[in-house]
Length: 474
Image (cartoon, rainbow, N blue to C red; front, side, top):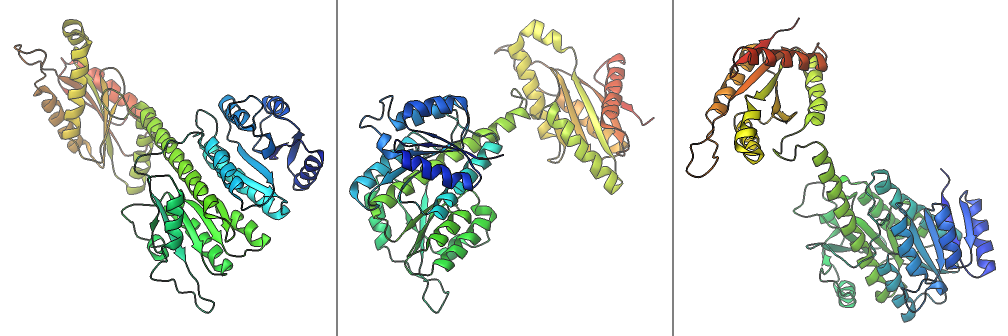
């Protein structure tokens, strides 16, 4: 898919130059001159990157014609990750620029660049932002606003930003054993965040073994002109599995435009140079910390969603969907190891009578008590699922018929021995279960095996309930 870029700039020459450069790089480019036109263009199309002139930022960020206000509205209206990059003409190291940068980043922008652009660096930055937005978008973990770049200042409690410095001598690649705290102290003083930066040696972060805590943001400071070594270190860091989610800001001394472009292409989330003032570096660190925080929230939401999709909310057991996937895995293992596995289909006897007499609240207590009893009486590798209202399924890997029958009878007795409190002063409630058992060697299709277990369960019911019935292979 061709990447779509929207350029919003009131200066015709700027629009023409950017359209030409980006089109030669095979992007689909649209150009407009005002925020009002940008609103119309964004309503009709989806863009991966939006380049906006900073002159379109009003004094009041909430004004309808302010680029910051439109950026917030665009993310809220469209469920798509879009990188918003502001462009400014003027000196790169003045106080106004630092204030403007902080304002843009806090509003949710991805970056603030200043003209004139080096074409290679600009294209590399665009590739970096598109790549950064693509991974979470492909995993469907966009935020409700449609963009993973947070527009608020909320921070996760306990978020830590770790910083380390590498100092490479001209004739050696050895890392220093001590770190100069002066740049770290200066950055901390200019930041308002409570999570202060910690000095961590490079060797500590690059160790392959597990550490007590992983950083959320790493700022790689280089105070020598060993740019190539810094790029190599950063590339190695990005290749480590435990560093995949870490946000990396790379600081380089006197890099060439080609080296700056390579830094983005090698995986840096942001790049600064030795001419970058502390006042600009601090908001960039805070911005990456906010993004890390946002990503953590979304990943937790995804994990929780996956868990809920595979879990019965009442009992906390796995559900039928999870059981189908797990049973296929057990079947493959049996075929590979030439072993058997068993399926036990459970049904609570006369459960409708329990609900009718005591109410559904007591019925829920019966189900949760049954689930707890099954957990306590089975191995960690056994599968326990709730497959219906009062129906449960247990799968026993590496179990023959005799072992499975003994386990089923033990579970039947454990359930019958449960004392379920109905109401203070009343005698405890007791329930029983009927169990259908099917044992196979993996050569029978899972649906057929489940049907055999269900037929055996029906047989157990017909025999008076509170018994175990066994179905053998046909």
